[in-house]
Length: 97
Image 1 (cartoon, rainbow, N blue to C red):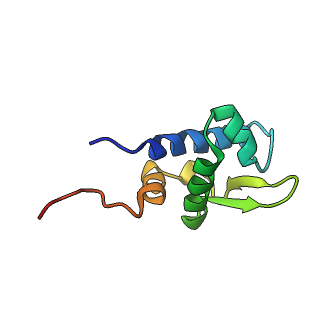
Image 2 (cartoon, rainbow, N blue to C red):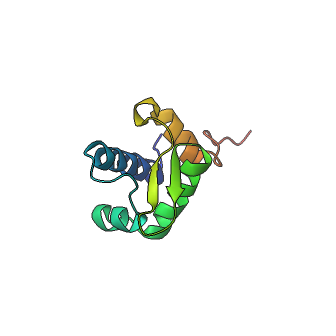
């Protein structure tokens, strides 16, 4: 079984955001910055962020100093939380029964 590329990218994005905030570099980080530094297209990030916001993992803020940040402590976010946020609309198993 292979996980989607979106799932892998989502883990990378959340680790990146957590590291930037942990270092005190920013409170909110913009999708433009993430897109440029991680070479992930902005439309892909928008879909990812919408899923994470809906799942209560991230929150967003508009404006010059806006972007995304964690809605809860990143240490309490599991790989299952990420998987469910990204793949929630898809079945875990495909069957022909």
